[in-house]
Structures are given as C-alpha cells and as structure tokens.
Image 1 (tube, rainbow, N blue to C red):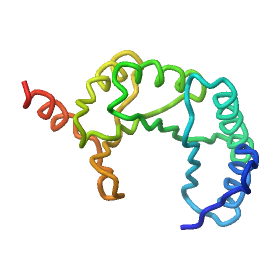
Image 2 (image 1 turned 180 degrees about the horizontal axis):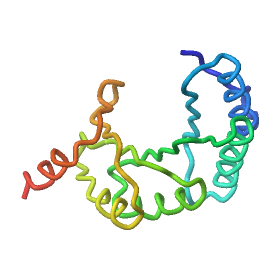
Image 3 (image 1 turned 120 degrees about the vertical axis):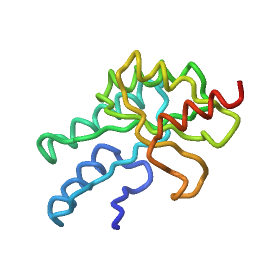
Image 4 (image 1 turned 30 degrees about the horizontal axis):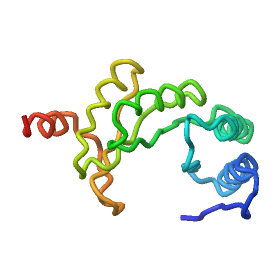
Length: 148
C-alpha cells in the first residue's frame, strides 16, 4: 500500500486530488482519503472537507463512491447531530462506530440509522486493525440487552 501525504500545512484538497490522480495513474482499485480530526462545529474544517469532496470528484468523475463517517460510541446523543452535519456537508453513505469495547453502549446507532438512514458498516472493538469488524446488528442488540 502506498501513502500519498502532503507537507505540513499543505492544502488537504490538493493532497486528495494528487492521491486520486496517483491512483488513476497506477490503475489501483481503491483510493482512501482520510480527513481525520474534523469537528462538525468548526466551520472552516467543514468547508475544507467540502472542498476535498469536490476535488476528488474532479480528479475522478463520480467520486467519491463512498463516504464513511467514523463516530466514537462514547459521544452519546451528540453523535446524531454530528452525523447529520457531515451527511449534509459531504453525503455520508455509512458509519464506522468505534470504542464499542468500552463502557459505551452505542445506542445512538439506532437514531443515526432511523433518522438519517445511514447504515452502520463496521464496529471498532479495540485499537488494533483486526479489531475493526463488520457490524453485526444482532450481536450489537444482544450486547445492549445483556446488561439490562
């Protein structure tokens, strides 16, 4: 796997554009763009995210094909507002729910799916790559009800 990274303080949109162009030139099937550290309450960061989304589409028509939002399960009900803001900004298509190995129950997943129609795609059950697993709705509900 190759990583395309920009210099410190470089424009995230330019880095994303270059990464997609590099992927096209190398004929790779998947280019992942990570825009970690975005807060829905920070206007400038959300505008920057919209720009990344636009330039990826210019580098490869029809892209991005998927936009996944990573949410911390310990966030609670604020996660719904976060998901709504990101969906409005960049058309999020799915959610990765992290920290389900902690005391968090992740109940906000119900609201996110019901109110926004966003599927929960993966669950983070630890900090290692192998701890990211496909989301199992039955196991999730069983986990919530087990402590009742």
